[in-house]
Image (cartoon, rainbow, N blue to C red; front, side, top):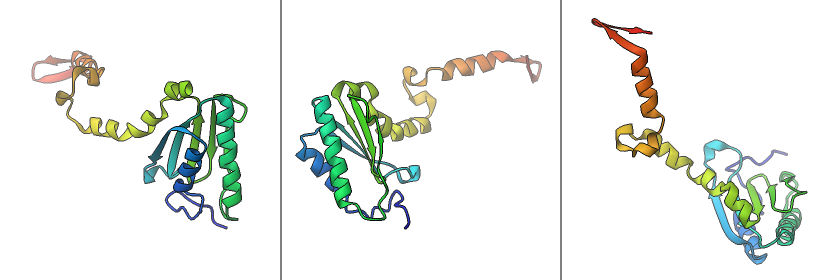
Length: 161
């Protein structure tokens, strides 16, 4: 049996099933993030809020129950983190990773920003520093100035101090 690798979802437990079951269980603020293929960890991160600890546990248990019912022999075993916590649980279904969180924990960790701003950061890195506002390039100017101070001109040559 070959394990399912990201990008090769052969399971009938797919993202549509996950979103449908979460909506059925009254999940709040369902966020689905398509993970870039080059990361090769999973295909999707799903982040949902629960209205209470009990609701969080019930959604997670229902997702596990549906997965076990639908899984094929070659589908991976799930991995669960945060089983003993009241405010967060993460279930790794292989091609889909679901984070169940209470709203205050979700706000604190801001996973959506972590996984969606990556491409924005890449775009910023490609921009010339002169075109960025000063607060975006904190440290760049001071590093450059420090470097210039360390190299002092002496005649036609530069010498390092």
